[in-house]
Length: 264
Ligand SMILES: [Zn+2]
Image 1: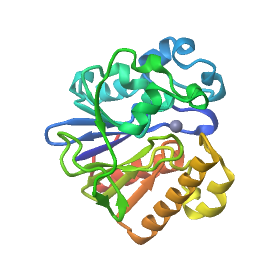
Image 2 (image 1 turned 30 degrees about the vertical axis):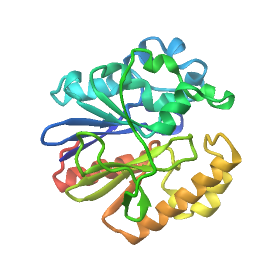
Image 3 (image 1 turned 180 degrees about the vertical axis):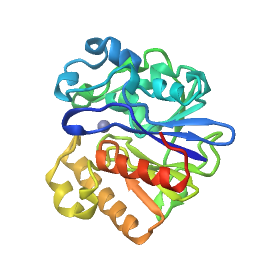
């Protein structure tokens, strides 16, 4: 497997929108999609007022689609997309890959399709109005991964890619674990904001209600972050990173380049 670390949405304060492109033997897989072509061309319709808050620096070159094409593929070659959640800064690229199978966690899809009042601003139904090929995965089995509950065997994706429910930021938020030649990567989405939250999860995460829809959700996210911090400390072959931390993106790009895993 080759892993490419993409930034599909540079934004306020140097934050990034970290997506993965995975080249496996038979498939081309994206983890999250960032902002897509239509978000660039018709931002008011696609993103509403949020585009001002985030001070996006997106253009056609930052879309996942453009980055896939620069690697010599066509957008249609992307067979599968695995989503951490459906917030508008993660789902915008879905429109650029209409033929891909979209692996989404059931509670997240249900939240996005029928949001509570407080959840409405975060989801932009226009980003999935084209009718994606949803492939829904559900928690509740007996699968685990490094001691955490997990959902294995996403249809067609084999044993090396699985989802780890990390609820809190959204109702059905998950991390995506990827088994690479150098160890496990856990794309933790917006389970936490930056790597310092892992170093001192107790203090920082408790202080920042990071998009959490309720105090209870914030508490759930706080527990998740502490569990991830413990896991990352215990297992040196595991790398946990979040969507929007620019330092982690740079570190992982450099590490991938050094290890011979192809990098952008
Ligand atoms: Zn986000």
